[in-house]
Amino acid sequence: MTSISNLGSSQIASQIATVEARMQAPITALKAQVTTEQASITAWGNINGAVSTLSQALANIKNVASISSRNASTTDSTKATATVSNTAATGAYNLTSISLAKSQEIYSNRLSSGAATLAGGAGALVFAVGGKNETIAIGSGSLTLNGVAAAINKTPGGVQASVIGTSAGARLVLTSSATGSAGAFNVSGTGALAQFDYNPGSAHAGEVLAQTASNATLTLNGVPLTSSTNTLTNAVAGVTIALAGSGNAVVSVSSSPTNLSSSVQAVATSLNAAISTIAKMTKFTPASTAGSGSSTATAGPLLGNFSATELKNEMLSAVSGLAASGVSAGAVGLSVSGSGVVSFNATSFASEYAKSPISVQNLIGSLYSTLNGLTTGALGTSSGSAGGTITSKSTGFIAAATASLNALITSIDAQSLQISKENAAQLKILQQGYIVAENKASSASITQTYLSIFLGSGSSSKS
Image (cartoon, rainbow, N blue to C red; front, side, top):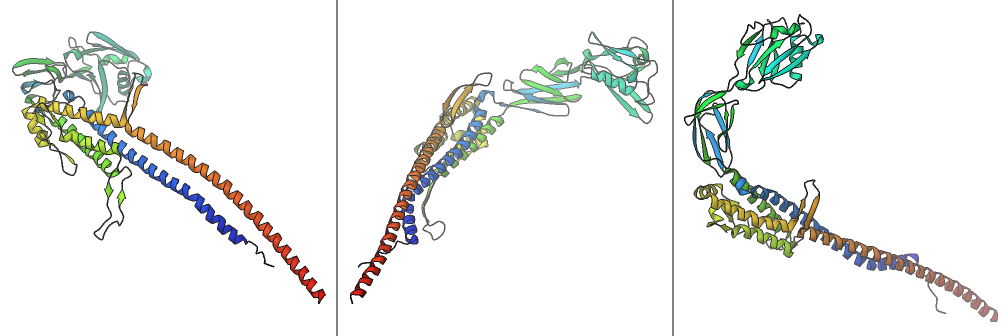
C-alpha cells in the first residue's frame, strides 16, 4: 500500500512565507508611491519658501514713488547734516553764521557734598517756565543736593537737575529741558531751598548763570532764520537739517537711485534663488557616460510638472521681456543668461536713471506688477480687517498641489491598511487550512501504520 507522508512544520512555514511575500508586493508598491509623493511635497515646500522670499523682496518696490530718490550731503558734517525725502528739490543750500540753540543752565554755590543735609527745613521749589509755574515740594528727609535733584527729576517738567561733585564739594545744576529762549526759567524756594533762588532781575547769590537759553540763528542762502531747536524741519521742503556746530556749511540735495537700485538688486537675488530652486526640483540628470559620477539617471521630484516649470519660465520672461516707457530691462542692467541666471548691474541702472528717472521708475513698477502676479498665483493671498481678522483669502497653486498630494497619501495609506487587513485574514485562513491538512495527514499516517501491522500479522498466521 502506498504510504502517506506527513507535512513538516518547516515546509508549511516556507510556503506561508512565500504567499505572504506575494501578498506584500502591492503594499510595498504603495509605500514606494507614498515616498514619491512625500518627496514632491518637500519639493513644493522648498519652492514655496523661495517664492515667499521673492514676494518679500518685491514688497520693497511696490510703491516706487515712495522710495527715496534723493541724496543729501554736507561740506562739513561737524556743522550740519541733512536727511531728505522724495519731495525735496535738488540744489545747494548755503548755511552761514550758524549759532546753535542752547538751553538755560544755572548752578548753585558749592556745598560740602551731595549727601550733606541742607539747613533751613522743608520747603518747595517753584519754577517759572514758559509762563507756567511748576511746584515741587521737598520734605525734610530729602534735604540734600542729591535728594533735591531726585525730586526735581521725578516730576517731568521744564527743568532737569543734576549734581556735580568734586573733592572740593558739590553743586546743584539746573538745566531747561528744551533749548531755545522759550526754555528760560526762574526759580524761587522756601525753607532750605531758598538758597536756590534765581531771577535775573534781582539779586540771586544762590545760583550762577552758566548758559543763557537762546534760539539757533543762521542764514540760509542769505535768508535769516531762527529756531528753538537745532533741527530745522521746515526751512527747506523735504529736507531736515540738523545743526551740529557754529560756523558755515553747504547742504547739497541731488537725485540718487541708490535706494531703488538696492531694492532691485534684492529682487534679482531672490528671483535667482527661486528660479534655481525650481530648476533643481524639475531637473533630469542622465546617467554618466564618462566613467565617473553616477551610473544611473536621476530625476527631480517635480520632473515634468507643468505648474513648476511654467512658473520658472514666466519668472525668466518677466525679466527678459521687460520694457516700459521706452526703457528695456537691459538698459537698467537687468539681463538673463543662457543658463537662466538673472543678473543686475547697478552702474547701468544709475546711468539710465540719471537720463530718465520717471521712465526707470515706470519700468520697475511694471516688473513688480508682473512678478507680484506670479508670486500671488503661486502663494495665494489673504487680507484682513483693522482688527487683524482675515476677511478674504485665496489659495495659491502650490498649496493646492500640496493639499492634493496629502489627500493622495491619505488615500494610499487607507488602501494599504485595507490590503494589510485582507492579507492577514487570508493568511489566517491559509494557516488554518494547513493545520487541518497536517492533522489529516497525521491521522492517515497512523491509520496506515495500524493497517500495516494488521496485514502483517494476518500473513504471518496463515503460514
